[in-house]
Image (cartoon, rainbow, N blue to C red; front, side, top):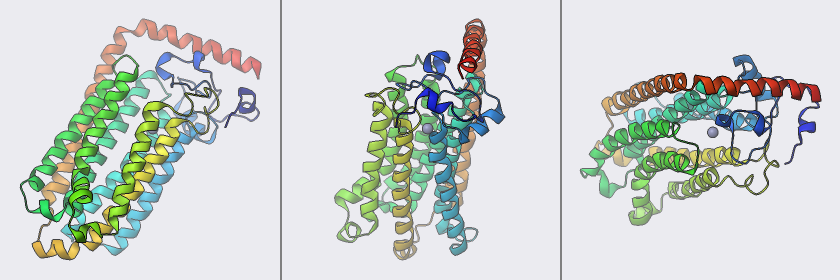
Length: 353
Ligand SMILES: [Zn+2]
C-alpha cells in the first residue's frame, strides 16, 4: 500500500516527525525503504508513542508484540491444566513456552527503542538476537523431550543433542552480534541468517528424520503435518528477509505497510504457531510411551542449561555493547557530523507541514 509523505502528515504524530531515507544517518537506512523513518535521536517516550503512528517500524512492533501476548495466554491456559511445578515431564514444555514468549517480546522492544541513538539501535538488536538464541535452545529442549523419533531416543545421539544445542545457541549470539560491526552489505545479513539457520536445522534434524524415516505409527501422527508445514513458513520468512521483496521492486510503495520485514515477522510467527501446535500434540500423545521408558528430562537440562545460555548471552551482549563504546569513541567526530543533518532536516520538514 503506497502512503505518500503528504498522507503521513495529515494527522498529528505522537512519536515526532518522520524522515526520508536521505535525511537519517546511514546506520538507520533500511534497504529499499524510502520514507517513514523516525528521528534517529528519539526519546524513550517518543519511541513508545510511535507504535501508535504510521511509520516504517509500527507493524514491525505489532507483528511480534501481539503474538507474544497470545503465547502468554496459551501458557496461562497450559498452567491451569499442567502441574509445571511438580511434573518433570512438563519442564521442557515450560522452557519452550517461556522462550517462545521472550523472543517476540525482545524483538518488539528492539523495534520500538532502536531509534533512541546509534548505540541503542545496536544494543536493541543484540538483545533481540540473544533472545532468539535462547529460543533456539528452548526448541532443542522440547524436541529432545517430546519430538525425538523412537529409533534415536535410546541412542547416544539423544544425549549429545542438547549439548550441541547449547554450543549452537552460544555461537549464534556471538556471530549475529559480531555481524553488526561489519560494513552493511549482503554478507553480514547472510552471515546473520546463517547463524540462526545452523541451530534451526540442527534442532529440526530429529523432525526431518521422523518425516523421512519415521515408523508407521510416527508417520500417522497428527503432528507430522504441522512439523512439515512449519518448514514452508520458515523458508518463506528466510526468503523475505534476504530478498527484500516486495519493496525491492517498488521502492516507496511498502514503506509503512507490507514491506518484507513485516512479512518476515508474520511468517516467522506462523512457523512458530505450527511448531508449538506440533510440540503440544507430541507432548500429550507420546506421554504413555515416554512414561513407559522413563525417559524424563532433568532439572539440570531444563533449568541449568537454559540459565547457562541466558547468562552467556547476557555477557555477550555486554561485551559487544562495551566494544561499541570503544568503536564509537574512535568515530565520535563523524557521529557529531551525522547528528546535524537530522536536526536541520527536522526544521525543513516542519516548515513543509
Ligand atoms: Zn524484526
